[in-house]
Length: 434
Image: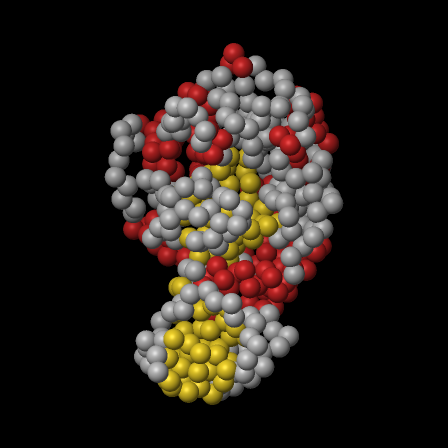
């Protein structure tokens, strides 16, 4: 405990309280590059809310729940089927290169052995195991990068200044609200996460939006907190799901439930920065486990979403909500397995690529890696596909089979003679260009 507090004090002492111009370190820039090349990660939303099987916002959405009654669920949380090895193996088989797990969601329950609060998986549950430690160790063993979700908003603690959510939660003592106390609590927890669990490639913040309607803009003191993160682990990236253009000190731009430049869910549509991009999306409908939510997207839909994200120069962070017994849902595991099978054949057209020469079209999209332009054809009602290209095309090959694809040079580009593209998740043609 004393070591953590000392580390926290030293880290904060090194941070100026005035606004700074953020200059990422060489380690940070290297981490950004590795992140951007990965293109695919798996999001894990898991906590005691899984017991209620109503999603991760159950405490908020059920209305009128007493926070102390809700907290009693921890005493029944015994995920005896949790296996870090099985989780990481299944995620690795999907072709994903990193995992982002909820360490503390808006209900305030911590999924690691924190000294900052007894409301955690080790002290408050009969399970008594630090699942984050087990997961971190297994990620290092299997070569999977680890990202940590951390909530800025809190619906249970007395000291958190009330925002626009969580008002239906009863039992909190509003006379104990103290931003200074809450901010120090968060920084102690973040220091633990970045001190005790090995290399963490990113901290994924969420909850800034809880105060986005305040009459007086709320000061989250992000400059100091971000600088603390970068001080504790210089290669650790900072991301914040605030639905705004990136703030000073952030290393990743996040888009929720939409690809960059789109806004079908009302949470995106902001300008696209030059930072590495990531879009998070659910595999079914909810983030946390919900027993009636079995409407999983097809493998075709998921692969095409991943490819479309890459076609916009972004990563896909695809969510899975584990069951209260600690298992990943069987349908989710099956979808990941099928995605991995496709990636095993076509992954070179996704990993390490940038947005292609031709933006998203009705027929599909393109990605590029060096001299290779990958044409991803989802649907095509014709035998030939016109591609408006400025570059010279030297050859065209079906990526999955290595067979040559005929093409004609025409004014302004080429015509690919692909024939009928049927029963294909994504027919990928590699163009060698000059």
